[in-house]
Length: 121
Image (tube, rainbow, N blue to C red; front, top):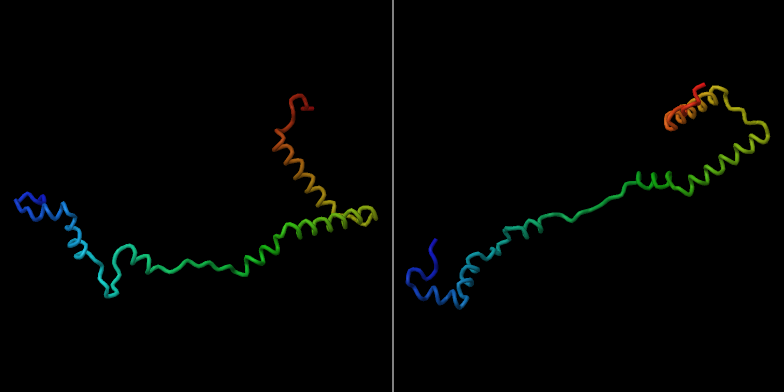
């Protein structure tokens, strides 16, 4: 690489000191105006704008999973069950009761650490 001014040409050294060297270099590297894209800014201009679309599925899910509506439905169901129990008309299948109790006891044993020491009877 040749250092400016090392060949004894004082004009080059004078231009560097005055800051005129950049003018010629900038003129050579100036982007073309014929519409050709070059560089990062041209790539950015090529990209499309990000878009976001919301499907109707999203609105259906929001409606179905509405916490206020779910709480109201649960409250109505519990009140209905309480009323049926008071009237004596609630009679679930015995098999379902046995299965639910079995699952509950199994869960208690698994998460409760089993039988306490001394309870082995």
